[in-house]
Every structure is written in structure tokens, then in C-alpha cells.
Length: 336
Image (spheres, rainbow, N blue to C red):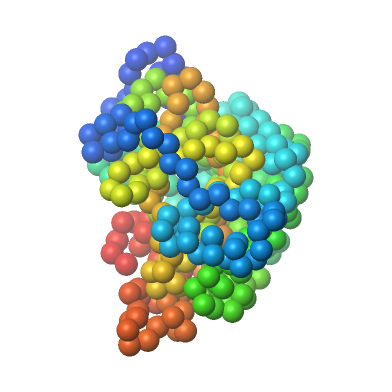
């Protein structure tokens, strides 16, 4: 059965002022109705390698993780050229003829999300997001399945490997600071989510121009089910965050990484850190893209509140369960 890709729908819709009904969100989701206009959120910006002392960095990460569940990282040590190469190779993949992209399509009924695709989770009321995507694991080497890595453009593998090599120390520092920020030893948070077995899952989101960005969403409101998400956007803004019961646009900062606290960090911290509720809007004129890397625990690892954070005054707020069971429930909209 041939799957309809959003890129193809966008091409057909280009000269119309309408989009297919399944992409029109209900009124309580439509960006034009639900977004606070005239105010762009300036989420916390954290300097990873600048003049701040580590204590200041820890305090900033802990505060942002507790209040926002989201922050942007500057002076992260990843060269601009490495990020540009990642972006270029991803963009060139999505510009390939459709038949070439379909070679990497996610197999029907596959348990993993890896591959080129459009639909990710159970869709409410049959509504669709205005986005195509490509998923594949990028670390550790034992987890990588290269059949989901494009051979074209030829620079794709090298660009992704160079980026992940630079990203891993950033992730380690963030885990350390988040750990110390709630009174744990520096190594404990990373150890609790799998240590060196943490899986780095790359996703490329491709949001083609949309004739009715007032009615559609790229990715609907959600929290990330992994531990942390570290994201590179292109220059087209589109991230929105739900704060104080309203939706706000997030200010775009050139060369910054956007970091989301995911569900597993909220669970491990017993709610001290908050997973951020966010969504993606689309643009009428321009393609928006983003490159989130999800830091996932090994599938069979059991996660629950870290015992050190539990006492009579702070009973566990979350169940302990295997990560793959958590993912299954979340994707199929089942109670946790």
C-alpha cells in the first residue's frame, strides 16, 4: 500500500488556499486561535563553555529543568561547520526523488521507529501532522542499522558521525549538571538511564511549506518519551511551548542547541524536573527542518524515581517500568 507523503501533498496544495481536511486541526489546536500573539518566549539560555563557573551552570540547568523543561545551549563546542554539514546532508536527502527516499521507508508493522516515514503514533480523530521524517540510531555502534542511513547524498554518513562525536560530550555534561542539580552525584543520572548503553536516536523533521499554517500543525502537542532531546533547528522558527496554560512561540537563537527534558528525566527526578509540552508550527513560504537527537534508555531497562530522591515526605509519583513498555503505552495512547 502506497503511503501519502506530506511533501507530495504540499506540492499539490501549493497553488491553493486549502489543505486536505485530515490536516486541519480542531479549533482547540489551531495555531491561529491558540497562540499568544506579539510575545515570543525567551527561554533560559545556558552557556556550556563560557565564563560561568560549574556551580552557576548547574544552578541554571536545574532551574530551567524545573520551571521550563526546556533551555537553549550556547558555547556548546560543536563547530558551526559540523552543524551546517549535518543540515546540508539532511536537506539534500529530502530533496531526492520520491522513489529514492522510499528505499529507506520504515517497514510496515516494524517495532522500531527507524526509517523514512510520515505517521509515527496513533492519530487522534484521524488528523495528520504536516511533516515527513527520517529516524535512525547513531550511537552506540552496536545499535546502528545502516540500512536506514541514506547513501545519497554521499556526505550523509560522515556528517552524522562527525556531529554525534561532538554531541556526546555535550550530553554527558548536561546529564552531570542535571544530576548535581537535584542533589545526586554527578554520574548518577546518566547511570540511571543506561550509562554507556544510552541509545542516540536521530530524527530529521521535514515540514514543507503549507498554504494554511493557521490551521495545521507539524507535530502535535507532546512531551518526549526519552530522557533528553538535543535539537538543531534550521533558521525557520516554529517551536512552540505550553507555559502558564498558553501556547507561545520560542525565540530562535542562531547556533544554539535546544534541549528538552523528556518523560524519563521527569520520572527519575520524581517530578523535580518537568518534561516540556511542545509542538511545531509550519510556514507558508518556507520549508522548516529540525534535527532532534533523542537520548533513549536501553529498551529493557527499568526506570522509576531514583531511590535517593524518595522518602516519607517525597513518595514516588511514578511507576517503575521497562522503557519499551513505556514507549508502547505512549505511542498507542494507553494509560501508564
